[in-house]
Each structure stands twice: as structure tokens, then as C-alpha cells.
Image (tube, rainbow, N blue to C red; front, side, top):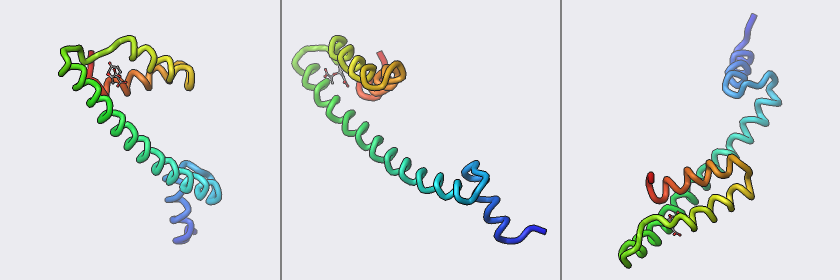
Length: 102
Ligand SMILES: C=C(O[C@@H]1C=C(C(=O)O)C=C[C@H]1O)C(=O)O
């Protein structure tokens, strides 16, 4: 016979994929920390976009181009050195967010 407590346990397990209540608690707590980090990362990305826009506008207003490929190579290298090949993909996504598609 299943009880109300069993139902609650199953619900938690369904949400986390865990097979024990202890593991489900660890996962729930760690997910809260990840959600907080993701909010901070999104905020940092938005801050990066705003600063990048200032640079691009200054360069365009001076008669230059929006994009500066040699600087982008440096940014890509920075992320690749820190995070490996997926770091390059992350940097390419960040660059697209900051200056649009080229
Ligand atoms: C922000 C700049 O302009 C553009 C955007 C970049 C970026 O978001 O990192 C890098 C190079 C440029 O294509 C820059 O030249 O530094």
C-alpha cells in the first residue's frame, strides 16, 4: 500500500532522477546553486554585450568597421586556453550575442 509520504518521495525522485531521498536533497540544493550561478552568468553576458556595444559604436562613429577580427581571434584563444575546444564554441556564441552574425 502506498502512503502520502511515498507519493512525496516519488515526486521528488521524479523531479531529480535520484533513487534515494538523500540524493534528491543533494541534487535539489545543488540545482539551486546552479540556478543562482546561471542568473549571474546571464547578467555578466548582458554586461559584456553592453560594453561591446560601446566599443563597436565608437569604432563605427570614427569611420571604422563593427567587427575587428584580430581582437576576436584573441578572445577565441582566451576561451580555448581556459576551457578547451568547447571554450571556442562558447566564445563564438558570446561574440555573436555581442556583435550579431557575420
Ligand atoms: C568589442 C569589440 O568589437 C567587436 C566585438 C568583440 C567582442 O565582443 O569581444 C570583439 C571584436 C570586435 O569584433 C572590440 O573590438 O573589442
